[in-house]
Amino acid sequence: MIPDGKPTVLIVDDTPDNVQLLSEVLGVDYRTKAATNGNRALKIAFSDDPPDLILLDVMMPDMDGFEVCKRLKENPTTQRVPVIFVTAMNEVGDEQKGFAVGAVDYITKPISPPIVLARVRTHLTLYEQARKLEERAAELADFNRTLEQRVSQGIGELDRLGRLKRFFSPAVADLILSGSADDPLKTRRREIVVVFLDLRGFTTFTETADPEEVMAVLGDFHAAMGELVMAHGGTLERFAGDGIMIFFNDPVQVPNPAARAATMALAMQQRAADLTESWRKRGYNLALGIGIAQGYATIGSIGFEGRRDYGAIGNVTNLAARLCGEAKGGQILLSQRVKAGLDDVLETVSVGELTLKGFHKPVPAFEIASPGTRSASKRNRIKKEPPQ
Image (tube, rainbow, N blue to C red; front, side, top):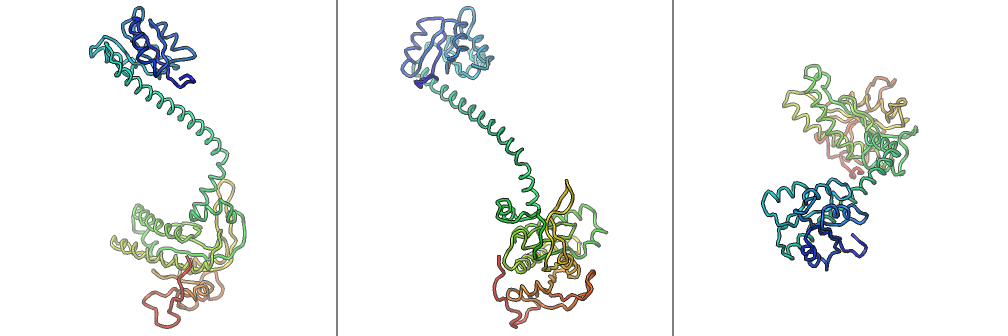
């Protein structure tokens, strides 16, 4: 298309009167060029100023229109330029041949000026749309090349994001990547609340069940518990078969992490009740036990080059695991420090001192009271909702 904005139409016909007529029909809206034979038409089409559309006669000496069209479509410069045959050949077979060599339309003589104008306008519009699509495709290809470069340069960041989302809720991962939270891989000391849970009866279950049954149960269990971990903003430390360890207050510190952990544990027991009911119908005798402890731990990257994980190490993790091991199905056992954080939030009941493996002295333990054990006493009352 030339700078004045008018598309160029090349008229190819060996009869000068036909060329004159088509030039008059199109001359108001389009710039026209003319050729009276196929060789001249190809020379114009392959020039530095190719046409935007070609009106092509079929019956011409030396080279007919079908051959001209074929050569136009074989040349990368002109293969997308729309070609409309304008001819006295009106047999169905002639039209079929015209479309077969690449024409977009077929007009029979004698011509109707309104039809010619309408067909030219339609195919020029389609041609312009196709040209713009090609430009956008080229821009997209260039963008993709740039994107590949950026992805290559930022692969470390993407890998970091993938690792973060293995352990943290999406909101926490976003905070870390934005720089609003500590680097989770940097070793540090922090007070955290650890939640440890596993299934009562799981070992016996695995001894008698098929591997497919075991994997199905674990899939249901992990999906249900994982959803609640994410919903409550917990940090997932590990999955180990039926055992799951979560902690709160790192890498993002939260108000009263003990209450947040207890709220999550209650939701887990409620969800587990639905799961155990469905498992019981299949003959699986399973139930969820949970232990919660609070204390300081060393947190950060654990492992070696090529295989690193994020974890917490300290007495608090051992205490949560031991309390979990003592918890009965449906029970949530708490350390004394966790209980202290729940005094104004949830009712707790002492279960006495427990002798736990790895601890030299008996450990005071408490449980979150179930509805059946609650009294009307002041101790029983929930004074305020746990923080969310």
